[in-house]
Length: 466
Image (tube, rainbow, N blue to C red):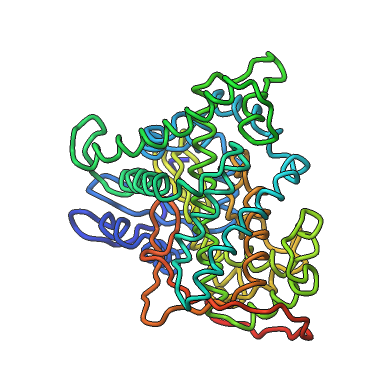
């Protein structure tokens, strides 16, 4: 393939190229690169260091699915993730990843997940009780903090049969600072090695110890008690390889449990924060969703059978994932030389597929920057080009927890939106922080008011700007 041209290179600074902008504003950088130079773009860091941006669905499919075996997760990504969560399925490669994926897959069959909706609803009801007190006093909440609290409770009860919400502050802060440590190592060109006793590294080790000891204690208690409970931890403990009959030891269980706990609650909480932001800004869409909720639920919490009867609520979350995908980009490393879009991709290069850019491309989406949940009503195979929409990744490494996250989000939105009016506190500057997950940089302050469900006639909302 040496005869093929390299992709066009985005101009950058003489010494550091596009590196500083990739750290400070990756979303803006990658959007500009695609709009300026097209589907496959080469970017430069320091002299001699290049990476490649792929944003067209056909190229994304090539990297994640068609030639997925040629694109591994780079060590730059895996090393800091492993430092926090061990060699779980998020960071594992090759046979190790495949074996653990096979062991875990049965735990995420939809039929098993259906039994967890009750815990999701109970956690949402607990959040509603908390919001009642705030609304009664005319107070405000930070949507980001609230969604972390409720998703942490859900991951605690569904995974460990243990309510972690009481430990949300004590556990949530170490989780967030640990993920921040990971994020810095994913984005900064130079960081102190983990063994160096810097203040940041010492803080990370202390926070990691809190998170690890919490999970280890729950695993040890389950082993000691001999109890069998209908949760994800039990499914991990009971998992057996179909060929060998071997299960996971406690270290493996911890790695996978940590991966699910950290990645699962963090990404869903981030997406739900953006959902509240969009709904608060677009009252017509919120009204449309509430009419559906009032008609189907009449003020009660949703059950598993209700979720299919709430298509607009699901569409609201699908559209949120389009505009603000928690996993906003996925790095890969080419193993062998390849061709994408008529350009040569050398071996051993970082290749970035970017949901943020693909999900907002004007050639793929009508009104790409508008919040239009209706575009997902009735959406199914063939509605959009393959990999025009991929908030959960794709190919063999498609997110194992996607069904869990979608169910969880519907339950939380349905429970709380029925009961509360939400208004954005004025004077905020709300911008995305593209680190480990796409979170609101300084949170989202919302003022809460209690509402009474009604059954007003449905009025289709006009498309509105995100």
